[in-house]
Image (cartoon, rainbow, N blue to C red; front, side, top):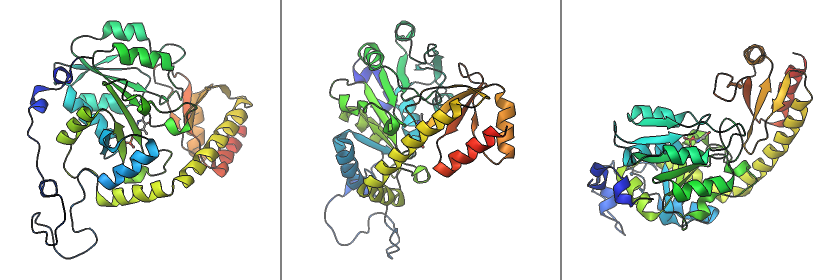
Length: 343
Ligand SMILES: *Cc1c(COP(=O)(O)O)cnc(C)c1O
């Protein structure tokens, strides 16, 4: 990895960040007349903590990562957007993504006018390490690795990830949105080894809180400081902070859901494989299955008619003929299987 200063856009490196009222005064006081808030107590009349310290302490404990190594955003999607804005000079720098993968990387890059190098996964849905490193140039600032990968469901081999972390000249972003459903543990324990590592996780999947919009990024303190400098001051609202704290205090519930979803994933996989319309069910380390079928569009439309919505991925590179099916409740999965049997 190059020195951080050489990777960050000059205007961001030199940026004087906004200093909010909540930022300038920290400590004990009785009368707050510094932020033009309404003084009458609604429970929400005060601006929220811009750095979410209480929530970060709870996440630090759950994830075994120091609070100083955590950034919180309005979904992982905010972290993705900030990464482009921190590191990629529009019209000059580039980022590398490995299709088929999560669609937001490309949308964010397009919004920021950042060029993308798309280097497809190999036929086993693994990163082509040699090719990636050969194509990386002095303007390659970000490499996105989604593992477990959406929409293929598999994890990337640790050996390949470490090769990329060691040799890629820029920042390597591991998107672990589905890590709670995977066999292996998070790379957020590798932060001390790799100064160019950013690990993203989310409350949107296993934690059952897609509606509150809360994403996490784990990285070196220097990279976290850049996130904090560029983010909108109050990017995570008070309701979201409270709801996430409640969920963390009740983490056993999440672990129970994960267990049930994993059991249902195995059940769904086994049953799908017995059906004539199903050609292949790809192994999954996530809470969805990539399923190859004979006529994906016809099957998709049949399911819609039966009020069951899955994701048609059949036009996506390396996913020809495939539908992506999220694991539902036992009842939902049975309803799906019943419809498929009657197809
Ligand atoms: C669902 C998903 C996310 C979650 O994004 P949020 O903005 O946190 O809801 C991130 N990355 C991938 C690959 C996903 O599939």
